[in-house]
Length: 286
Image (cartoon, rainbow, N blue to C red; front, side):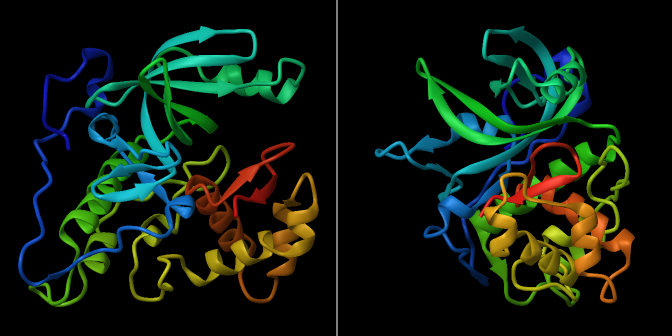
């Protein structure tokens, strides 16, 4: 996954080792392959996207033998081109480069402020959909934000490796040393500050991997309950969704304000919810 040619000097932050996928071996159980493509969010490197294939109906992509729809990438902006209705970025993560299109409302002060943050040379996290334009693979972003804590770069690298191994080798039924691979990996992941401008994985950084105290989805109890609030009929019917303060209020007595705010930050970075009128109002992607 990280093999191949040399790393671009403009994105040397991402230089890494030669990890390559292998086939499943004995003692493993295969991971689920299909059936939830519209609901997936995969952490990927650009090299994985380059090697992936688009399904014949052009509605889904297949990477590591599994269908997917939504992706998250981390990289450095090496080119910024403003057009009439969108901004076209070149994103480099050390394994390759890809074009990212971010559609904007030119009359929106909020969009103007967000665009000003996404400058040449800035490291960003992108959530979006894979598309093909003029025969070239690209990403249409529905969320982009600058990275302020570079632990997030390491976290993304580990997450993409973990998901790749899970899909290509399956989940081992009895790993040496006791405990699940997911639980042991989760304990070693770096954490970043989830407050303020959104390092986004604080407190719950490892929660995207199933571990003790988490549900089968890999989310913690507070993350599950926060997501349930965003999925209520009232929240879904509102054009602006609901505010973080409303979620804090509904979960008061069960979880602290800090726990709820960290859970919302986690759900946002995992692509489960998206911001609407500002950084304090969100709607579910479901």
